[in-house]
Amino acid sequence: MDEKLLMTSGDYRKKIIYFALPIFLGNLFQQFYNTADSLIVGNFLGSSALAAVSSTGSLIFLLIGFFLGFSSGSGVIIAREIGARNEENTSKAVHTAVVLGILFSIGMTAAGVLFAEPMLRMIGIPESVFREASLYVRIYFAGAAGLVMYNIMVGILQAAGDSRHPLYYLITSSLINIVLDLLFIAVFHMGVEGAALATIISQFVSMFLVYHRLRHVDAAYRIDLTKLRIAPEFLKEIFAYGLPTAMQGCVIDFANLMIQAYINSFGQNAMAGIGAYSRIEGFMFLPVTAFGMALTTFVSQNIGARQRERAFQGIRFGTVCTLISIELIGVVIYVFSPQMISLFIQDPDVIYYGVLRARICSLFYFLLGFSHVTSSVMRGLGRPVVPMAVMLICWCAVRVIAIMLLGETFHSIAFVSWLYPITWALSSIAYVIQYLQILKNEPAAA
Image 1 (cartoon, rainbow, N blue to C red):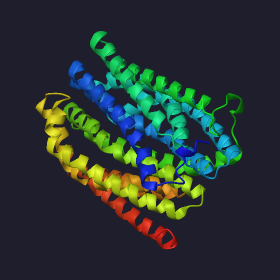
Image 2 (image 1 turned 90 degrees about the vertical axis):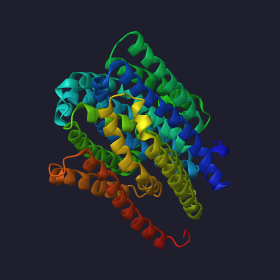
Image 3 (image 1 turned 120 degrees about the vertical axis):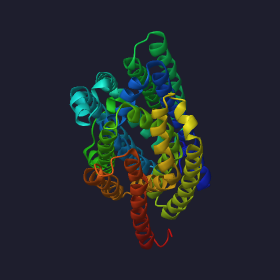
């Protein structure tokens, strides 16, 4: 085991920063790709294609989020065993996670391809963009195995404290994706199917890169194809940790799917404008994702090493870093949202919808950041049911009930946009209560 990667000794602030920074940079490149993808689609194919691609995001995240929740759960287990320096259990957990990833890949591909059109109908995709949206989703899910297996295997590397190699793989994948986007759309004039093909090809490239790393690393988390089997004791633990996380992501994405259906009722321009904003909003998630992953691994390893006080020191530091960085991004988006949205398309109606959403949400990003990072901390502490319950009530039930009861009365994009900061505030209050309860029961950590 590479001692330099372990997060159980040394300056905890440096360990967290050094782990989070490569994740931040890797996700930054990926977000640049996502933005470039929409820029290319919007500028070369028009608002109809941009609406088709953007409006499918909630459906894609609904299916993907459920399966990827298990990669988070397996990462917690693997990090805990690594922190405890139990090589045999680490190997069993790793190979159980890989087998689950293979099974999930098959299931998600089948579900995505078979049920794409009925689910698009369910969320009210307009007929003007339905064919393009359906084509994009079916091609995307045909190659979903690359995304699932990449995330499972990257989760193994990150559980070991290695966030540097995933950075290299994301940079490579993102560059390939942009090049293929330009080639398929601008040169070969393939339409939205070109964007989908570029995405799945780059995903498989990154999957093979991380697999090559795990096959040749000299550590307990090395993948050996002859050891690919499910260890029942770790299967039970991965489900215990992964299922609440998967359900959490699933219910949030279901609520977002309902909101997307509501947005679709305002027509193609609203779909394109909100879709363009969502690409910009992705930059806001960069510090949240980076510090969230860092804290999950940091807390899991230190809990495994029975260093609870060190774990709580890292929690406080990582939370402060998240809140400061995310709010700075929110201010930038608030000020420059008109210029940012106009990069995607010049239609003033599309720009209006995107800017409206940005101006309502961006100054409240600190609430979103606190909820997400605390959710990651709870998983690291072995309490995955807490974030599932909080998100189920605050982000799913409240949003869906509000849409059903008040959506027609306050039929506007402003109404649905305000649901986000309101529910972020509710979840933040719930997490503060939970966190204070944990500190009360952990006097040594407080």
